[in-house]
Image 1 (cartoon, rainbow, N blue to C red):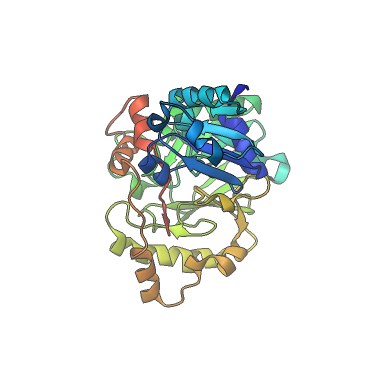
Image 2: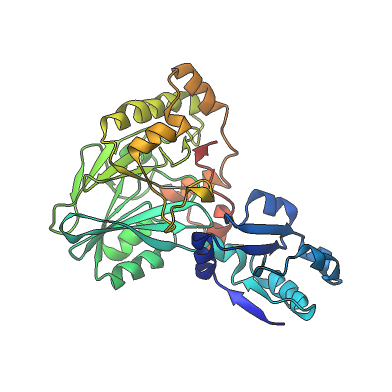
Length: 375
């Protein structure tokens, strides 16, 4: 039987298309329980590779023959070995190229809308990590919002769209992933914007992003209008793009709301979070399409793989937006906080410019799911 290679892009298509797939994950059980490849119609079997060194015959009855089989490990090597053993045992099998390391870094661009005067808005879905970043394109210019450290993907995409990146934004100081904003700004000469209340300890120059900033992209009438919206961090800032889209950062998600504790100030910031969600956002149009900086569960993806929903719909369906009693809201938020993100303090310090870890260290710091939401 044959052994084939599946890359992260092809696997992402299977997630978007809701295809059936059986995944044999050969990492340690604790790693699998913490973070795995999510798919609505995926089935899983987790057996550490070292338990199969003497053969795979015992696990064959546990693997169905009516769907594709993919072997996954941390970096690829172990999955190749197990895939070859399964092939020798008579199974058609694939292994994931680059393993979970590659899965964590894959970005899939999805067009989410047309803008006035011919512009476009793209969402970059970091499918293995749950991060969402954005590119606004208009008349040969581009703005990038909440970019990841995989900077070449954005630079190459802008080039294929014949656009020059002129502005780079971070909605807040990220604690779960390393921002690529500063690097992209340095490479392109773009202006790098950061909320000043999140930037009190940064070691580099930036343009202060504050409520009321309007930034033009191209020479068309696309305004990126910023709204001060604290709660996840003290400086968190949202954007209304083209009077049509609300980029909510880590304040509001499709099925949850942002956590206020990543600087250890949950009790202080939960009030800001409520004011942003229940007062500032209430003043906005219900027709705005919410585009968050993360998704939490795979079911939040739309049919095309994008993540979005109208603000009015979220006010109806998102539990975090429907707790009338303030005391109950505070209790719900502060008592339902998930574990802190992996290496979150080091990630914050990297995003401040205080430390500059090498690429392998950055990968290690980011391993695992995002944990930016109140569960």
